[in-house]
Image (cartoon, rainbow, N blue to C red; front, side, top):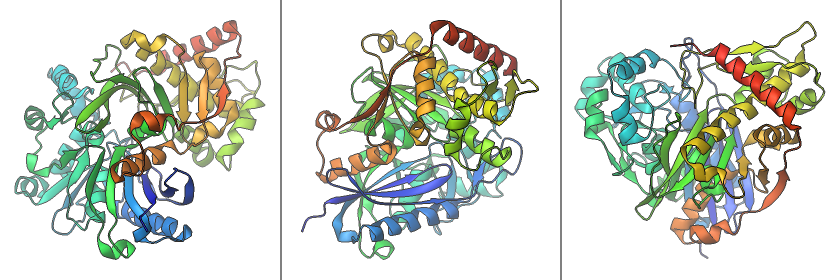
Amino acid sequence: MAARHILAIDQGTTSSRAILFDASLAVVASAQREFPQHFPASGWVEHEPEDIWESVLATAREAIAKGGLGAADIAGIGITNQRETTLIWDRRTGRAIHRAIVWQDRRTAKACANLVAAGHEELVAERTGLRIDPYFSATKIAWLLDNVPGARRRAEAGELAFGTVDCFLLWRLTGGAVHATDATNAARTMLFDIGRGVWDSELLDLFGIPAALLPQVRDCAAHFGDTAPELFGAPIAVRGIAGDQQAATIGQACFSPGMVKSTYGTGCFALLNTGDTPVRSKHRLLSTVAYQLGGKRTYALEGSIFIAGAAVQWLRDGLGIIEKASETGPLAEAADPEQDVYLVPAFVGLGAPHWDAHARGAMFGLTRNSGPREFARAALESVCYQTLDLVEAMRADWPAAGTGHAVLRVDGGMVASDWTMQRLADILDLPVDRPNVLETTALGAAYLAGLDAGLLPEPDRFADMWRLERRFSPAMAASQRKRKVGGWRDSVRRTLSGS
């Protein structure tokens, strides 16, 4: 009997998940495990690579077992991952030389500022579509080479391998047989020429990174290799890879220019499909690879917010205001409407369109009567306001984004909150569409694997399978919206570092 299932590995910032889909993309089984976050210094964020690997392997095995299946039943594995998180490992042992430096980490802010001051920002933007920022992998790689004893010498000798999380997992899954990534993850390193689709030698020289470290770059849907037989009892083909936000764009079926999606996880990421031509942003957004299929790249404008769901985690773990995330919506709904309390969640700096690595979080508008309800509302509204900043920048960069029947497709953990989605529609003054399948990141990875395996149709036919669960339409009075947005902009202005 032919294999008719797909396993999606969704390796995120705070947890790893495995979701087993059937050939109609219905969920058969799933498993999830959280793993520790490490904060060795202010603005530093690290993961233990073995925690990542062990959580991925355990959840994959658990999902397969829950589904009552074996390796022979699975046509392919799709991998989606937290992007920009940087690992370097020993090619002989497969062991990392240091903890993974997470995308949120800001330790290279000074190095980035020096590169900007030296006049390199235009070159980086022109080749990669990115800004020089600690968010991306290049300066993280350089930091590891310069701070782990012997690392630079070993890298130049070809003894070490660099990869984002997808690449590290592929290496481990294939028993060290394959060192490869896909175009979407390569596009987030600040080393990849997104126009030509190659690693850029001039950028490698700029950041001081040996080419011997780098993986091969492939399409998002491709036969990357087979898993080592001992992992799942028999080999399974790895057939799809995409960074988490690009995978969500695919899962949301945003295949037509002008379509936009926003994913609300630890951070928030909005991508606007701009077709076969990269748009050079004049409003501090990123131009990136949305996906690459059949050797053809499709591009997107992206706005990245560092803190979205992480603000809710802060309410829970930092302040102890809530015990679980689902409490925030009811708290926010019960907040005093006469209080305009704003949270600017610059805990690790501000992302697009501000790109201020030195800004730090702040709250404004507090009164003696402010309490948990107002804090909860401020945390949730901060995500809505930051999304507005992204959408307005997109419209300014690509005016076609503001024409026609504009709508925002949303996904991620936070969109389960009806209160938050309604407030998002109100602040944006746009309809917000929530799909039937909220796990669109894993769905996108599964689609890529299913496409390569021949189980699933080409993108235009896959788009017909997308289903709406609920549309949230704007209902806030224009005067109230203007007042609230004005208060947000004033709060951001006060928070920016001026650096």
